Length: 589
Image (tube, rainbow, N blue to C red; front, side, top):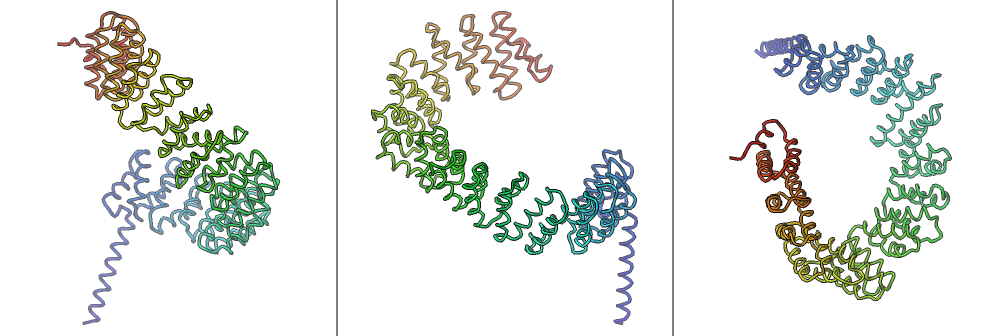
């Protein structure tokens, strides 16, 4: 009985396998989706075949390989077919690609060779090695890179002799492939093997580009032990090799690199800024310390010192603040500006409190510098010190304090800035600061209320300036204030300012106010401005097409003359379709 069961099991296995193999040979697809895609490959137009190839990369199996392989010789569809053949996880794809190597040439052959590399088909090594002697240098390069992607000992054995080929193109292609293999070896933790392979490329008669790539690989593979070779690159008179050195200096995670770059800053003034930038990109504590020391050196080359100052803004910390503050008051305007910008960019940490702590004891011009930094960083906690600085007899300090007040004042003390903007020598600067303060206030209506209170007893010019600020603040109360100004037909400056601000209002709730002005104002530029502002809202801010149509109909109803209708007609031209235009010009019921 056991024997009978074994025989039955064997027969069943054979039947199942035969059925499976028959399905593969039939090549009609294993799922309904794949069958549909294969059918499209056989009969659909060219564009649909391309899409089918792309989808077979997801839904395809060995059944689709034969049909895909027939497209490898098609100039327009070969690349699409290879997308699927590269992705389908079945050795039949490798076999189809290997078979195509013998019957294709030129661009189509290059594509197949590339696909064999993508699939890392070890059985293709012999075919690819033979193509290293191809008459087409593009094919040679593709074959070498494919061998590099395969990267096993057999592929490497095929590549090494090519480094000594009599043909420069073959040597270069083999060198590029060897570097690819070396990168894979390094990623796998085999740094010593990677270094030796890169050394072999460096000794070959290949292009400077390949020598540079291999040198980079050899240094990275050796880690800290590769720093002496890195220094050779950093000192190379050849610009290409020097560029490789800067690249490796950014990549190599060894503290010895920081020391090497720091040393080179002082020994090569013409390249100092490039060394500074590379050091900054490494961004470690040694880099920060070295850059701070360079910034503090008044005898250092100015370009390098300027670059280091800017770099500290990117990688600096609390410890960078003292030296940057010193330079922020430097007589060199560019250095001072760079230092202030760098301080503004420093991560918060304890920087804000450290700056605030210096305000109480600072004297001009250091105090002015600190106030500038307070403004740049918007250190709201420093508001008491900023207010105290407003009383300083030094004009430069007062000016800096006004700017800082615009960035730090709160709503409760906004009146101080309002009052300062109404009179005094620094009133114009205070108005700029007031504008800055108002547009960042979280409670817009309360802010406008404070401005309205100040405008009540202000001179006409100040009132207009405050109205401009109200317009920039926005909100319901601001709209009401600007609308009130636009209704003062007996005070032309206010009428002018009100209609101007309403004409550029950024919310749709200004539309009813503008339409009211269109109906009430006399003909002239203020009414024209109101029509245009109303129609701008219709075009840009209306909620939907229906609202836009209704607004245009209302504008037409308010039109008094052909000039009005001409302005409105231009707006109606922007309607999305003829039906919308017809609705917009239809008489109101």
